[in-house]
Image (cartoon, rainbow, N blue to C red; front, side):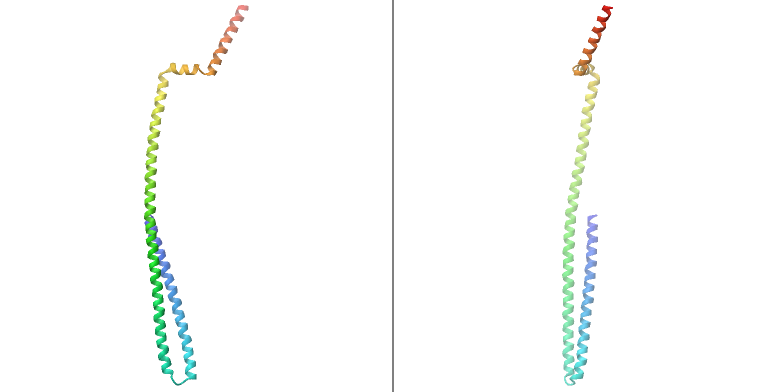
Length: 175
């Protein structure tokens, strides 16, 4: 499941990178078009003011536009490659974290299973001990009676019964 999350995250990152590249390309194209319009309007103004040397000006301007286009393309490509490298680094890091997370989860699940088995074994052993004690008390009634006779409540009850019996015997002799 964590691998699927890493794949989904990688796809989302790739989409975000593609969208950023598309926006940067659109912005660069817009800037180049604006610069070209500005250059054309300056050329039109230059034609009206200077009739001589316009061919050389246009050749120079054309060369400048080509160089500017190349530079814009190179910068766009560099940005694109940098984002792709960064995306690859993030995806690799996420994949590594996913593997680490999976191993931790596996270890925890194994420990939980071992603890559950050990707890079940301990409960079973304790149940056997309690069963042994219960059976022992059923068969050793004298031991249970002695334990009850040694309590303070039982001693007080015997003393009260003896006192009541003596009082009844004294009453019978008087009558």
